[in-house]
Image (cartoon, rainbow, N blue to C red; front, side, top):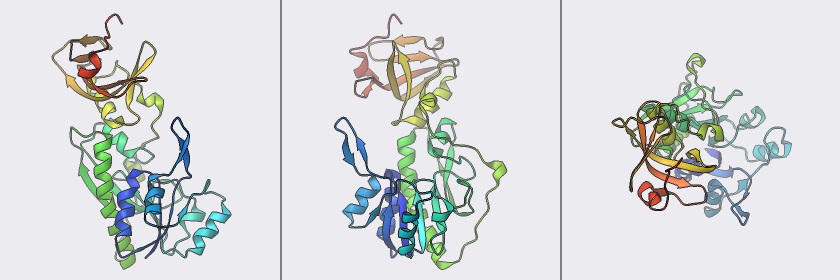
Length: 303
């Protein structure tokens, strides 16, 4: 199969790698434009571009997709059999219809559950004990296309966004290769999604990351898990951002919401039900630390 791969972040890399190492041909990769990052505003490549460059593969980085006649003609000139999309952008119909066999996407949930930009985060935030991965044929409405393959996988109590993301990206890579092979063989049955079972997974905003201590400890604990290590749940203390990366639920202390219990090496904060032991924290302008390190030079007393 002559494949064009479309993706941007680290999540895409295992899928790109497994296709590179397969019998199929990656004629080019498409990724986001380069960005200036950091204090020095140095231009950096996306992870997908870096992998492509390291493997001597051509790269396209269109600024826009819809109405981009030049990009459409470039893609048509490659005579692709298939577009494989893993964590990229929303493709317009004029683009995803180009290949002989259309285009498919790897999505980080068991569709139609958690349609949207942040399915892994929302599964954790909602305290799910399992999630899934789906490969589906692209359609005009986002995340609604007919399904090729699905896999269920457990969410462990110790999972956060980073650990679940990494596990899903590896499992997803095998699903991507299996889907390409299925399409090549022609021996598949596309399964329509039941829209009545759909749930949203919108983009994570700064407002979502702000901890409301008037909520139960379990709910806040799951928010921390779903946003760790990036962008991280946070609260404000004397107008400083305090990011929280790891917590434990404490049931034996009776604290009011946002009431602090602090010792030399322990920090517990009250919630509407139960409390949270803070295990990893980062004060604005400082590095991420264990709570023991942090408390050597900081006290919440007097708040």
